[in-house]
Image 1 (cartoon, rainbow, N blue to C red):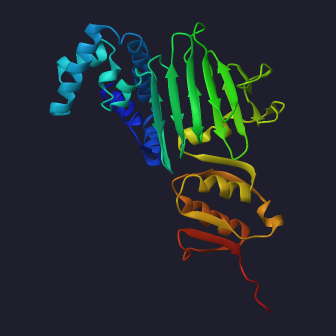
Image 2 (cartoon, one colour; image 1 turned 90 degrees about the vertical axis):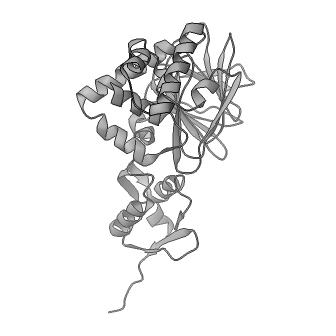
Length: 318
């Protein structure tokens, strides 16, 4: 249980590296570890509802103080953190306390991810280069996605709708899991569990999205819902990028979101549109480049400043 609590704390720190997520997924393959982590999450959710209690706050401060002094769990600290279900004590970062503020901002840089657990038990996983602002009120739980992409797990609370706003789009949920990604000219919403209503923030018309469906919102319209593989669309939350028949150019664009050294594809349209399938580590663009050069007979030039150029190999004469 102590190891599970440690993982819970690591996943809540800013930033979180892709390798950490991969290590966590490997650790959680064990049924015992998975059960322990689920118990930690459940206790955190329960503790979140009690954080305004003076006795709970005092116990949390005491546990945090002991953690800072020795960085080891004593029997007394274990009773406070685990016996009483105070998982707030496990997460040392100040972001846990900031969740009580009227407005809290979370952000990630290129190649980073971050998991934020809110005071109502809701969870937001920020993808690379993302900014979200959390604003809670007695009537509504509002999240503003200012840039990037985030995966939301809304805690069930019918009395306070969970609302995400992004570039004019408005997504309303009660208890559900969904992904929101801001593009240059649209917002893409993908639903994994539950139901959400999607529309414009300043218009009454709303579209209903069901599990494994996706739609796009622009300033002018809301598209019809289309079927999608929700697990593939949200694969980034597991530390992997899964492509199934994705055009090479689109796969390159996706890999580029996670690295400051960009891949430049110099290829004719027919080649750029060739499908790519596979699972890749977003923090390892070199592996993707090696796979692409092998599959499509490309050459990679790493000498360019802050980029790698992919182009067809020159043909040799007979």
